[in-house]
Image (cartoon, rainbow, N blue to C red; front, side):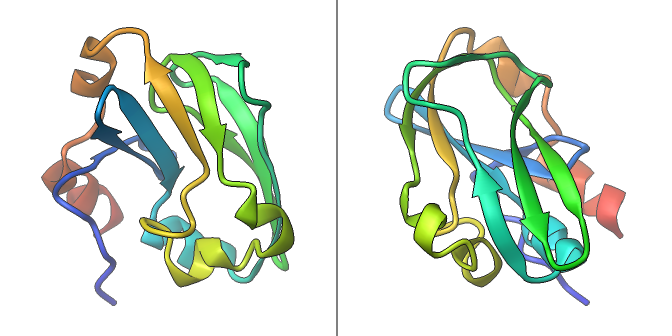
Length: 127
């Protein structure tokens, strides 16, 4: 099966993505991850204003199959969360790179992005 791996994102080995947008970084889980999890039924996210660390836990995602920790691809301050996921966690399954995003972070250090997998490296990992 072919999974969507957008070229404008960078990836963690734990299947989270980061997309830089105007000084912030939007974060979510990959198409591969949502497929592995199955139907997402609950997402726990940090509060706006929380500080998160690269590779640190920022929340929990629960599906019909499993409960998994979520890890941050970058360090910084949470400036937005996708509140739509509280009422419609299935958005993560339907559009993991669009409506299913999880949070936006004010990036502390641009070099965090360099430490992440490129789309090609991530595709090789999930192949």
